[in-house]
Length: 255
Image 1 (tube, rainbow, N blue to C red):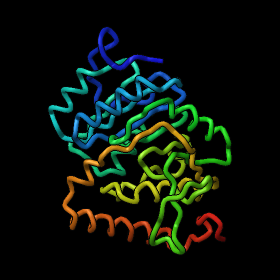
Image 2 (image 1 turned 90 degrees about the horizontal axis):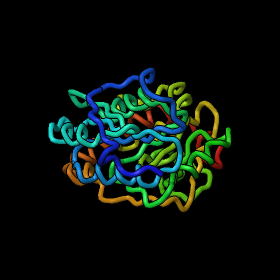
Image 3 (image 1 turned 90 degrees about the vertical axis):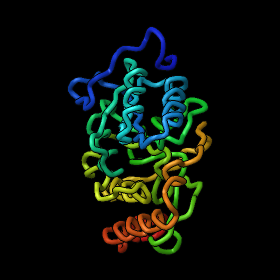
């Protein structure tokens, strides 16, 4: 197990857009998009270095436009940490795709920056993806309620989609599916749409239970005015329905 990115292991990191060709191959790339809120990003980063026991790299997609966060990330650099700095910031879908493009891992696990690892959550997710019938896995699953207009939490194991708090998938599958839809500038429902993209190519979405992860306050949600977040969420729902409303065959237990 590696120690956190501090002390003698640190080295300056200045490459803002690292390419796959320049990165050492890894079993898994752990990704998070940082919109701000440095304490949350630091909590996620330290928990990854403290608890991950797989051959990993951590990729922070700095989508904050905050010079203070940029400086902090430079100071926290380590061998297994890479930073993608988006200037100017992009929408959520495009920001995640930048991380997937740069990832050197066979598997990518996307985390919301509000999530903290309390133990090794990575090995169980990798084990789930060893089953070739599984294309996306994570601790938080959802199923549609009667129609694709509304989803509810589900313990699975088979679900319609995995929530983006923690979602694991093979990088090759993500690239083949076109990644996240870049039209999803706000994060809501982008994870469900991405799960459907992966499953549309054949495969299951599976909940991995009892993972040692904690969801803290979702700062971006809380920082967005209620009327605005409702408007953005509705827009994303309509975008999702435009593509998938007739695909009841992708609803678990329906055909």
